[in-house]
Length: 96
Image 1 (cartoon, rainbow, N blue to C red):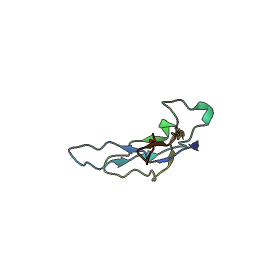
Image 2: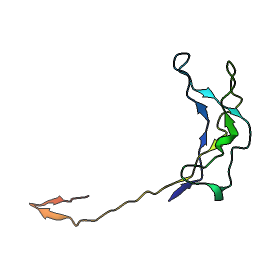
Image 3: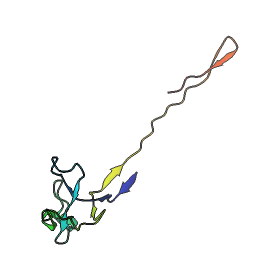
Image 4: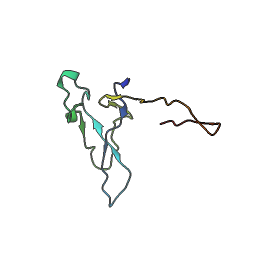
């Protein structure tokens, strides 16, 4: 079993499609992290820590400033052994 606590994320805003198709950076106005005791499936960072930047400006939020929720990866292997059976002097084996 392999557990990862989080992965980096960058908060972005959807652009106005009539002006640009590149995602816009948000303005950072506070602490984005929440204590893990306050995490829920829908809320694992402080949404009020970001705002839309003023018109004709770039957001000041950096890259990978958020850490995503953790996840667990489990790898399982099921196997079975078969005995070899002699058929006309040759060996036959079957594996799954």
